[in-house]
Length: 247
Image (cartoon, rainbow, N blue to C red; front, side, top):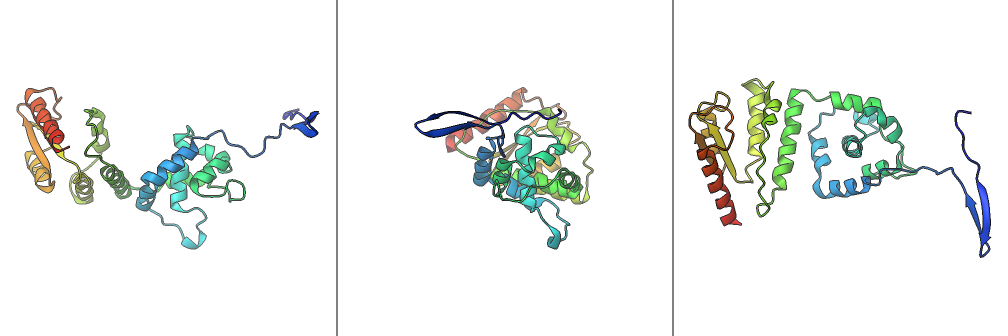
């Protein structure tokens, strides 16, 4: 036999209450954390913001899965460790994932299949990707707590996201839009004097466009400063002191 299922059996009654052991299980889920993800999305609205920025060229008359449902289900599945899109052929029936998306766990229609998510993830082009990036920056800027703790964190891998960016045209437009999302937070621009990526003209333009930005130039340094240079440390120290004075 390829699928053995133990038969149910009865136990002695307890106070005239019948006890039965059944191994059927029913429609269950092992991802209880989906309930926490659902509440976090209600409070933060990350998936709602991304769904609004996603391209959707589908015929509205034939749409069975709203964009917010697709984004929410995919993000929630990844958060629970189901990175492979093939998992959605099984997860589309998961009662808690359906609940997280907004459907009834039992009577609600199944969620989208793997094929739908493959089309979803391959839909954005360069312009749409820039819009999604801007949406994430907007999300961050909308939840910056000026009175919170400032943590120094520098990741050189940030340059990878700009490795294929070509200057001019729509790319510059969307990059400036992304930069504009930082207007709600104080900003310190630290530039290497010899940088051939961030020009002095662009750095000055950033400061002029931002209502609360300062520019620090590290002499005889290219792109990007290590941030342990004397000029960089002094600029960061002054910047943090100014933030603390405002809090």
